[in-house]
Image (tube, rainbow, N blue to C red; front, side, top):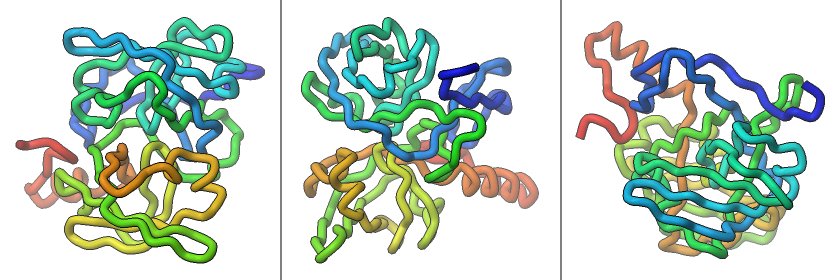
Length: 237
């Protein structure tokens, strides 16, 4: 449809590699990890096991309608009540437990991206907006024209991370420059530092991580063949 920036693909049923319970008829939005704007959370209403966030983002709301998908710091959320350059989202307990949105407060700056439209260029990589876990900034090294940032990860996620491969950090598509058993590093150019929240992430900050979905599917398929199928990121604890 004209003006509708969204591609949706049918989910493969229950038991996805991330352990998420996706309904048989539910559709999944697709992102590319190219941040369109840095927005701001203007209100947080906490529930017993959920939260309602109000987010300011004039670019991503320019054509937003109720039910559209927007990535907020890498988390795919459904738009409710868009108006005057703002939109609301309902965040369930599972998402709060698995992402950094649990610590969101009014004034927090967030990376925003609308779901990609059919025919758009995939400038980053395929990002589902299904956060696999959180990482912590453990080191920042400033260079003349870029900054190297190293993250420590949990839940064994580094097994899905390879040098020169892709990873989404707070919704930003990045290329891995180094990886070991517990950490990985990326290089951030001035544009990324300036136009996303990653320029503000100091040592000790937490970030949302989504590993490459291809790696998760390969593990599941090969594991099924070998009889060693894993339960996916963050699962089986």
